[in-house]
Amino acid sequence: MTKKLMIFGFGQRGSIYASYAAAYPEQFELVAIIENDCERIEKARKLYPAVSIFTDYNEAIHAKIPADLVAVATQDNQHKEHAIAMMRAGYDLLLEKPIANTEEECLAIYRASKKFNRKVIVCHVLRYTPFYSAIKRTIESGALGEVITIQASENVGYFHQAHSYVRGPWRNSKESSPMILAKCCHDMDILRYLMDEKCESVNSYGSLFYFNESHAPEGHAKYCSECKYEDCIYKAQTLYTTEGKDWCANYFTTREHTKENIIEDLRHTQYDRCVYACDNDVVDHQVTIARFSKGKTAAHTMTAFSREIYRDIKIYGTKAELYGVMENNLIEVRPFGGEIYHVPVDTSRATLGGHCGGDFFMMQNVYKAINGERAEGITYLDVSMESHLMSFAAERSRLRNGKSEKIQNGDNV
Image (cartoon, rainbow, N blue to C red; front, side):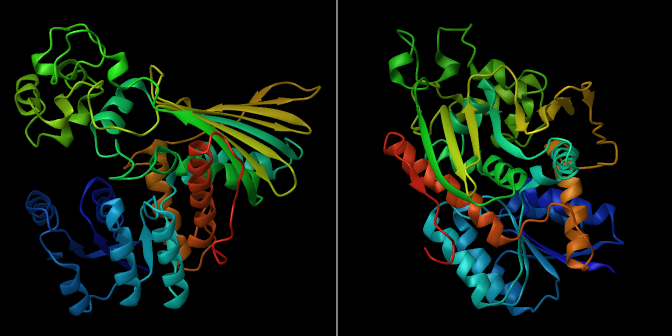
């Protein structure tokens, strides 16, 4: 049965959900888009001329647009206002992660979902990747025995760190959220998902070690466009014009990505700034250790200092260990006393979106869930709250030099 979908926020994420609806009209009918940015509105009108577009969400609510699901894909700091308003109006939600930037705002959304009796699915897209889905099925098959401990790492990539977390929107925890939430709430969710037990406590260490004035070369300029260090690996004019990295230029130009256009539009923007002289305060490395309800453990490392962007994982069970790299779709099972074998990972069916197929398969499973069918990996707000509370506790622990922090139940905070 086709479901009616409203998109609230037509940025990168909202555009993906709209494109899925357009590609699979037997699943979703796109009925409305809420957006107040002029360029995005123009883009939406060109792509979806028959769809109602509202610049004020109150107007959409007043119009009583019939929708089975509202995808809230606005800025993180707007989630509380927008999610609660839509739930109050009677809509179920597909809510982008993070749920919100602060623990208090997350809990306000959670309590509103209870008050208004609305369903909220959170976009933890990694759950739906063929990679993590295959790992979950391997665990459930019993091939690893009982899982005892997990080690995982998120290797952010030196250029991605510079773009998003030194120069970009998530550079300052006061303006956005701590790195452990903005970047790693996916990973906290995956640890909780694979361990399949409640997390009781976390300890965390980390800091902003490198991207600060103390590591700036002598005589550096405020802007890369004016700096004498042409061979700096963080030179903005080089990074943003390198093939495979020019997607980052979308943050400061809407023109065709020619080298000339990028360099011209980059000049004196926040993305032209020296990485050692920005107003960033989020960490560039962090290690978090989690203890689960039966005494099992997990450790997660986030680091800016990797050549490429990738996640890897090791799972240690009583019968075998598993090693995997998401970006390579590599899963290797190493049985105790048996032959090593690989678990196949098929991403060929993912026709749109990113996150190694996660966007595509999430939308597919969201459709199944709201039709009452069996859906793999679906995470409603109550479970997603756990991973967010893990993240907030980890940040408190980090700020307290690794002091153990207990994880509260969402209903009791």
